[in-house]
Image 1 (cartoon, rainbow, N blue to C red):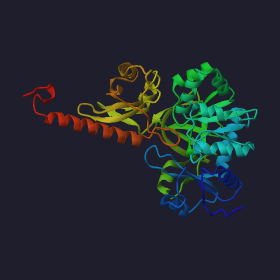
Image 2 (cartoon, one colour):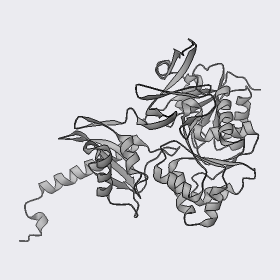
Image 3 (cartoon, rainbow, N blue to C red):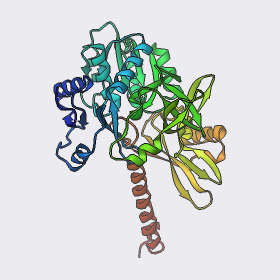
Image 4 (spheres, one colour):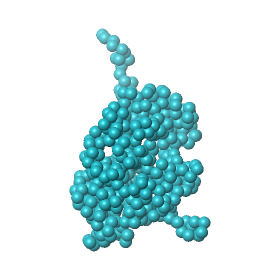
Length: 414
């Protein structure tokens, strides 16, 4: 085995090397840092991470996708990764073969390799950037009696689009024993469509700091514990990360230890997600920091998205906040162009009726393609920057029109 104190930077494009290095790390060898496609192992950020002191039980360092614009280096132990994989197998009915359709530098894709290693099965990789047809073509290479895939909602939506028009595609999709979908909330409309096709959909909730999904369909798996404190979802169990490399303050703020009823210390991860437990089932309602104060009323942007995404053609909707002279702030929507989408006024009225007047979006902007992070989540900083640029161009256009001589835009001639 290689020296444990050396953090190896592994390009994910070299799948054989990545799998071998991960196997070694899970067996107690040198920990690894998976690198995104095209990333230089010698760049400054990689060198900085590799120079940091490493925990003794470290197996993998995963950098978060940075949806908030602040990526972190999450340290994961061998036991956390393996416990997560074993809990998944137990929840899904047994080990199987995985179709890898998510980036392996992120926990969503890497955990499929861990599960494959634990199950001693050979993973099948979908082509990078695969469309729905290519993904299902790759699924034909699976030869295990149990077949699994993990997706994000945008991938599921595209697969359902294809399967609803193609009986063979639908049959291929039905052959999966479980289609895990996580990374974002799965709309009720997507769940209905999957159910109508007979797809074995399982909703997964978790994050890099929990070594992947640890709550399936609202119920914790393995030895995971869930609680709500101050409206925040907090998680405990053997799959928690060791912390953030090089950031003791953030580690201390997010990972807290408190005694249980028997006085035994329990380590909890503060997710920053808002949620509630009803009948023992977890419902995540959004991010605690994704709140707009509109007319003095606190409104969850994630709740606005949830309602908007139930409407045909609005499954990609992203809610953001914009300044408003009267309300202080107002929610707005950005959505990918869809010719089949219902009118904005209908969506706006639906949001108003369910969430109140303060939640009704001021306007909506269409984009040909939503900026997304490698794991499929909307890239909020990039979307916000695009909106600022768009509004600035509108402002310039208004100023230019205001400066035109009277009658210039009315077609007057000498």
